[in-house]
Image 1 (cartoon, rainbow, N blue to C red):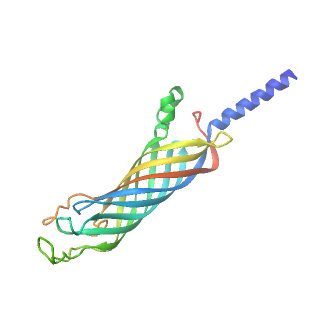
Image 2 (image 1 turned 30 degrees about the vertical axis):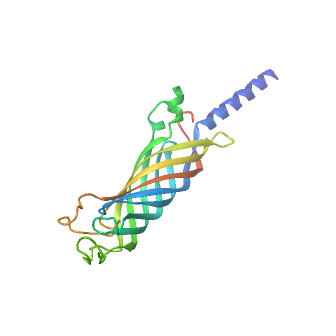
Length: 238
């Protein structure tokens, strides 16, 4: 009986340790937050961003995935902007992203602090943004202080541009009842560089207006992810 008990105990401990060193290979999630634009218009404004994401986990701390976004980017103000410009863009986008978390490159087993921040990550992506300008000032109003009635400001209301997102964020992992990493609370800051003149709908000559850098919108979001799929082993204890 004693030998049987010891054998069963060792099997239980070994099985538990094995479970702690395994992870699910996929995850999906959703979230939302606010964004702010930095474009050719003098001052950006706050808008909103909603997203859905699907990731493949090469390791628990290295992912590649797809992210789709829908939101509103806006900027300017017809009354306060120096050129009386303003715009509203109801955009959609899809990007492919790779993310590297701190847990992949540090030995967090020996430090409680490193263990707690192992979900800190950087990411880079590439994709496209579909711009849909729903409100824009193409002609200066008659009461404008300078060049009243000037226009039209060149540009298009609908366009497709390349987008490059840069991500900095944190994943907080929550285990399920079996000890697997199953749920993730995500906090993310993302800078989206768009190449083209579609984000704000203005394509003015740089000889008349400052127009030297890509149009950018930064988003600040919080979201939730669920891990699923086949199980894969990992070299570190999770």
